[in-house]
Length: 634
Image 1: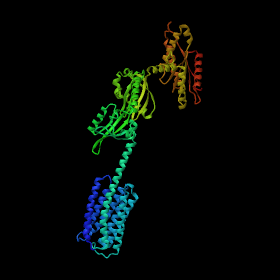
Image 2 (image 1 turned 180 degrees about the horizontal axis):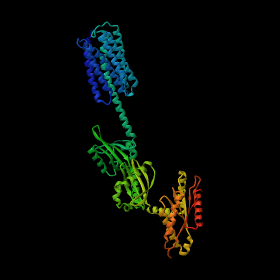
Image 3 (image 1 turned 135 degrees about the vertical axis):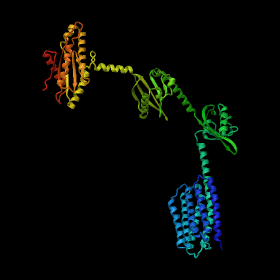
Image 4 (image 1 turned 90 degrees about the vertical axis):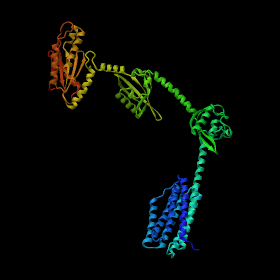
């Protein structure tokens, strides 16, 4: 039987074109799958390949059509492979496929333009398509799934048969004497008939495979929905919209309501006395009619035994056989409501405690933009001059001066960042305060609680105690203990840096006679006079103290013996020149002073005091009212 291969080529082109339309329709209906799109493109290329084959004997474009046919057939088969991998959830390696199809095209071009050989072209195309067919078989068998096993095996069988036929075509062409494409040789005839059979079968099995997968996914989705419905811990019930009759309910509904699944079937929710307030069902139905769904409607429901619970209802209208039904999910929030009520009461107690607190108590919320007040004690009104209601919700910058507000906000953020309690002294409006703050984390909300105490009086008392501990009560100059602390520091510094330092000890001459003759008040005046004259003649860096009784000491850093002697000589002359009135007329007062200087690296404050005391003794022995300096050799 003679077969017109030219007619068969155009028939195959038209057949593949119809199959392109069928696959494209499947792709549009199921565009969530990427495979059908590639199969559609592959079938389109095969159709164009047969159209090119029809034009191969054309004197003008015949050679171009020959090369194009090889490129289109091999590319179409490659796209089948890509589509199969994508449909089965795998990804292809594109470059090997591109290089393979390019090589097939180049070989076809060689045997068309350089070494014209019809048999070689046919062998090249048949072997290339056979290899791609076997590649498709491997892709299916290696990646098949149970849900599409039947259709997948059918597609694999089609590709396997095609591959074997194409190998036979290549062998037949190798021994064929055909000189033209449309001579009805066994090889050409087998190639075209194989193309017709494969195109029809592949399209049919591709569509079957898509539908099998859709059916499997639909079945899985249904099973998943049923599993979720039955496994959900929340009650789920399906009722008719018109009368509320129960169609089905899950185990969660039976456990919550007390009605077993079979017992509830056919009963309306009103007959079950499910609603504590029947008007709540009207509210639910009204919301469904208006919006088609209802989210988190809070109602009070009754169990079979009459006990009640608070539920959040989320419902949606659905159609079953054309009849509107309601799918309702009930979430029992009774425990949450009780917790909220307990929290509300605790909040009220906390607010009452804070409002009535005798200290400045507060709770603030810390946000990226700053801190704002949530609660404060009533006594903040005295501190800030604003009512409590005016403070609530305000930020630090709205309540305090800018610099002070910025400092407080930075401190608040430091407490939150470090998770530590921060205790600090703050100066506000001339008074001192100490604050203790600690963070409270509530989910994404960050609170800061604490209290503030006015410590102004305590600070004053502390300062007074420090003053009393370091100062002579009568003269206001440093006392002996404080002098020795400061003198030790200065002596160590002078020794370390090899700087000069001098020490002077001063006594009022015949001080006991002044007390005996004029009274202790007069003696106090004499001490105050000496302290005043000394302060006027020494520097701020010098350390001046009353050692006790009528004895004073002056430590002069950065000062040699001679320089210290000059200072003390001025003091001695100034005291002698005053002649104050101590109550019984003017009194001549004189002083004696002894001076010692730091001698060497091995010297010490104790040695310095001894030498200054010896120099003072020498001044008294020499007749008083004079300054004696230890000899430089010492």
